[in-house]
Image (cartoon, rainbow, N blue to C red):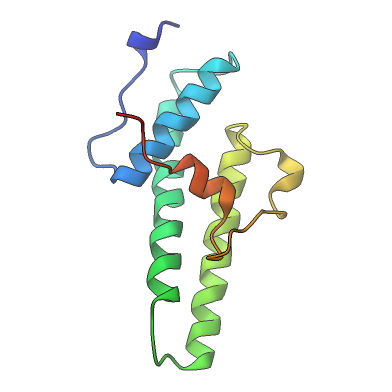
Length: 122
């Protein structure tokens, strides 16, 4: 399939989600694995990746939070991260065996997700 025939990311995606959509699509194309029907599942995957990053940043920035609530929020983040990693494995972005083993950066962000949501080159 020619690059010009690739579907554009949906307009409703945030900047980070749009970047994830494009990065995954480009990598799949380079591997010879892109299929047009992937565009349907890729948008929710990209939205989940961007939402994970947004939520981590928001929760880690909270002050004066009850420890029990913070623990509950952190548990939700982990569930979201795991779901996104499962989707990324479906799209061949990470090996299935690494879904539960994620490199984290100094801020506590999943490096694989962060890399896929990195800004697009102009």
